[in-house]
Structure formats: C-alpha cells, structure tokens
Image: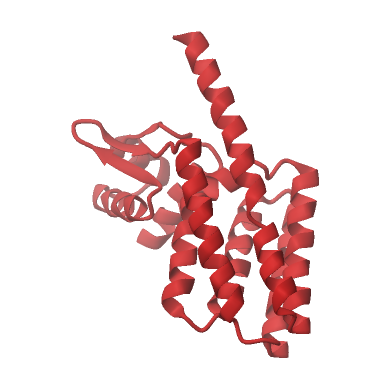
Amino acid sequence: MNAELEQWIEDDIVFGFYPPGSRLIEDRLIERYSASRHAVRAALVALENRHLIVRLPNRGAQVIEMTPEEVEEIYEARMVLETAAAARTPLPLDPPHIAALEDLCRRHAAAYEAGDSQAVFSLNLEFHRLHYGLCGNATLAQMIEDTSRRVQSIRAVKYDDDAHMRIVIDQHWAIIEALRNGDRTAYVEAVRAHLPASAEEYRKVYDRRHRHNARLA
C-alpha cells in the first residue's frame, strides 16, 4: 500500500493536480487516497527524499517549485551522468535487451496515441531505467534515475505537445538503433539530444506563472 500511495501522490504532482508551491494537507490526502495517517506521513517522507516535496516548519508539506536556474543545474548534472553511462555501456547490446527496449518503446508510443499520460510517464521511466541500467555501474544508474525523477513534472508539461512527443518517440528509436548497431558515437549523441527541450519549456511556463501571479498581487 505504501508504494502505491507514494506513486499516486507522485502522479498527481507530475500531472499538475498538486502544482508547484501547493500545500499537501494530511487530512485531505487521507480523504483523497483512503489512506491512514501513518501511510500518508510515510509517503511524504519518501517523496521528500525524492526531492518532489519539502516539509517546512509550521507549514507542513509543500510541492517543490524549482527556479529555472535550479532546473538548468539538474539538467547539466543529467547530461554528465547520462552521457557517462552511454560512454561505458557494453556494445552492441544482446538481442534480448534490444527486444525489451523495442517493446517498451512501442508500448510508450501506443500509450501516447491512446492519450494515456500515466502510462506514457511510467513507460518512459521503464525505458530509461532499462537502458541506463545496462551501463554496468549500479550506482551511476541509480543517480541517473534519482536526478531524472526530480524533473518528472517538468517533462510532463509537454505531454500535450504533439510535435514534441513525436520527437521524443523518434529519439527513443534512435537510442535503440545506436545500441543495436554498437555505434558508441551515435548512442552518446542520441542521449545528449534527448535532454534539452523540457528544461527550456519549463523556463517559459515558470515565467508565465510568475507574471500571472505578479498581476494578481
């Protein structure tokens, strides 16, 4: 139950039910998820450890709102970590690994076509967890997953952008093709190309939100 509750709350953060800066009030969480207070508190601890929320003295839990500068720092770290993993992954990949990545890529694309944003989110995580997990360094793979999860809500802001999502799907196939061919240069470049757009979009969203708030003040 605890893992499911953490995922439910995380999904609601990622997809904007709890926008950046909003408070997570225990009694409302208990009611929304039909969960015990103990389970809710444990879930909030786990989400704080994932840097999705922060607990403030006398204010309770709040969804983190990162500045564009903080997002840029995370994306810089992701670039270093993910290209390092790509540079050390044994190539070419074994056919069963290629088949598993192809299956995830097809399911991810099908979920997008079906408008199932939650499946798009979870399958994207699985796709990247699998291919970075093949780098041969479990600590590096975990660091990549941790930094990636910190910006999940940023990446989700473009799930309704058809042109962007079709580029993402094509980029997944480019990653697979480079792995299949054992082309190290193409693989590293495919990983590098897969990162920047969401950070740029977040800056636009952040600026729009704060201009709106300034007008209301």
